[in-house]
Amino acid sequence: MKTLAHRPLLRWAAAGVFCFFVGCRTPEARGPEPASTRLGPPEAATAEQLGALSKESEDFSEALAHYVTGLLHLSKGEANEALEEWRQVVALDPGRSDLRERVVQEYFRRGEFAQAVEILRAAVQKLPESAPEWMLLAVALRADKQWDAATEAAARALRLAPDKFPPYEVLFDAEVERNDLAGAKRVLDRAAKHPSNDYRYWIRLAELCAALGARDPAFQTDPEQIMRFYDRTAELQPSDPMTLARVADYYVANQHTEKAITLYQKVLDQDPGADGVRLKLALSFVARGNKAGAIAILEEWVKLEPLRWQILNVIGEIYEDTRDFENALKNYRLSLQANPNQLPPCLRSVLILMRTHRLDEALSLLDAAKDRFPETPQITYFYGLVYSDRKDFVNAAKFLEETERLAAVSTPGLLDAVFHFYYGAALERNGKYDLAVAQFRKAIEQNPDYADACNYLGYLFAERGANLEEAEQLVQRALALEPNNGAFLDSLGWVYYRQRRFPEALAQLQRAAALIAHDPVIHEHLGEVYRALGAPAQALLHFDKAAELDPKNAEMAEKIEGLKREISARPAPTAAP
Image (cartoon, rainbow, N blue to C red; front, side):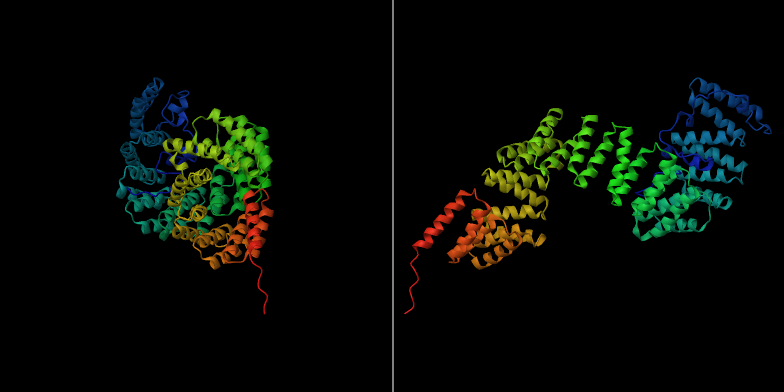
């Protein structure tokens, strides 16, 4: 059977369909199904309950006997036997609609749709002008996949009650089952033209329009029309928190955040315990750029419930997004105190500590996490990142190697292009050239547009004077992605230098220096190019600048002294005759 891929939460074809007729909420909407909705022991079999059978029925005595027998079975926990007795009651006494609904709903819950159809066919024969019975029959036939009969029953229900939506849904589902999406769209268009003062009519119509458009954009309903359906829902039902929340969710999904905020606040006024709505309200404030307002809502919440670690994490993330790292760390710390058995706030804290150059604190936090989460590749990965920042590439490579071993078994998705890039960089800094090249190739294979990896590998080849044609291709690919990246221009200039294309090298390095004026490596490269071009004075100027920017570079000091000796040894220019 073909079904819509994005069916909304409410399904009239499930047992919750009965709630549409009797005015209650569906099982999905109200949460776990209470015991009272199933066949279970009644609180008491009162005279009023027994007298609810239709006295005018000629089969009253027999129906009453079955009813009482059903209660006796139920008191013994014999639900199947009770159901059979009550099935006979509704067959004898069609006026007992509440019991019929209960029996039919039980058959729906069990998936015994043919039994429900049998009862409802008998009901519509005795009550041919009852729209609810025809609607229930249409839904039961739809559940039993009797599509032609379901369509006929739905059409009959619509003639009796054109302002009710369940028959339209049966017709809609029948067209979808036949893969006639154009027919399904015609059903919805027809429903849209009918007036109805039932808010459930409009919210369900809106949901099905959205679902059909998601399945095939060719049958998309104008989003503004769907918005009007939701607006009508909120207008007709301004006091049901669940309905208002569903409308607000649609507003958020379609960037009408201000309207959503109004409804979420209204829901909270009516139901202060609606924590999910409170969170959605805060996130709506974030979407509107009012992060302070979001934080205020959430911080007020955790004042009342300080162990709500999930909310502390959200607060931490918002503070982190605003670059208020101290408050972010504070909330992550409180979250970990409330629930130490979670890894994400720990790792987010490590990233913040790395950004703020507090690497010792980051390592201490990872040490504590490692004891609680042994053999966890995310932790060894972060150790590798922290040690890379500390320029301790021996430990960085050790932990990244351990990450590769652990993640290959448990979380292979962790070994992405970024991981291979950092592992390759650590290996290269340890002088393990071939292993580093292999890691960079993996990074580029996983993400051919990873500009940093392309540049790093190209520069690595240029430094060693190897694979220079490939090096040029790699750096050119990086520059195609980021044409104004000074580091990439420097790499291209160095590749040209290694290829002895000195004028081209000079042009690229001058562009790089214009973008990154205070990089010692670029000035060292410019010096080498000027030296190769026979301009030692200009070369010395750039070597001096490199030494000024990196005074601890002993090799540069030696290079400067060598160039000075070279300049001094040159013969003085001959005077003109």
